[in-house]
Length: 169
Image 1 (cartoon, rainbow, N blue to C red):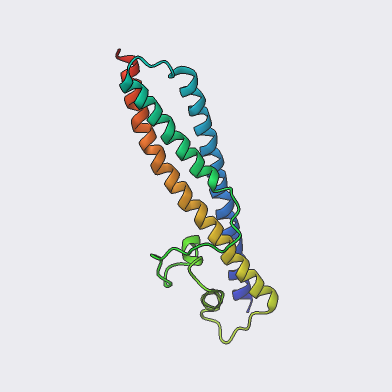
Image 2 (cartoon, one colour):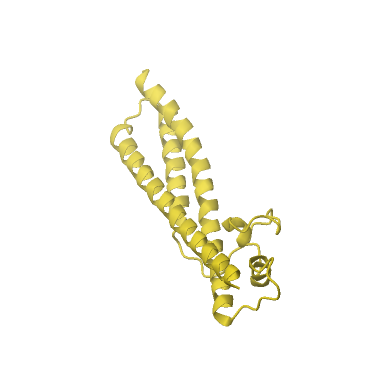
């Protein structure tokens, strides 16, 4: 019985750590975007041609979209959110994306695997529900971070082209 309680505590700590980690990643990414935004506004707003103007504007738009996507991760969601449809229920429970797709009954079943007829008390059931809720929040933040990075990759490409045009004229 202690085995199930230990698994439950370990999983709870893992999910909390995952949420903290992804929020720290978003914070650092937001700081980077703000620095780049100020550098571009400070140094690259003089444009000599329509092409440079369009390129500078597109670069700023992608940077701001990336920044807003990352900021959106801090917006609280009251509903449980949508689980990832591509996750199989047989996957490891030590990934937030996998936990969010499980019901509380399925998660309790996974936690008590290998233990004969374990009965969860009300506190443990509440903890299981909390683990699922936090994993949904962490998964949403991870998805938003990946999206922000994809948008940021487009920004980097445009930024490099903008710098090449700026310094070769």
